[in-house]
Image 1 (tube, rainbow, N blue to C red):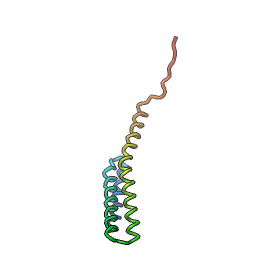
Image 2: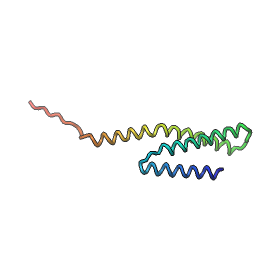
Image 3: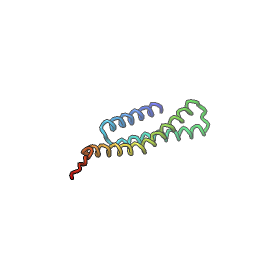
Image 4: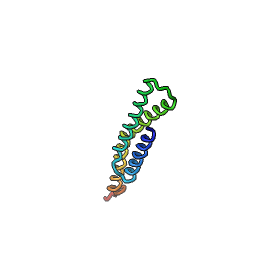
Length: 105
């Protein structure tokens, strides 16, 4: 199972990096990664509640839940930052600089 999770994380990480470098939509990959980590965390919690007493399992479960939460927040926040960034780019292309007012009298 650990190899499968490692392969999944490697694949989604590569897809996120590729999407970011190509300025493609990365949200589906970030959402997939968040859903996977949250599902891992929930599975770990259920396993611990069923009686698994393994310190490594508890650490892995906490890590999966924290990473899932961070990824959900990033999934919600990063698109808004992208919109702000795009708006700044558009404004800087259309802006002609400071306007000077001359008084003719």
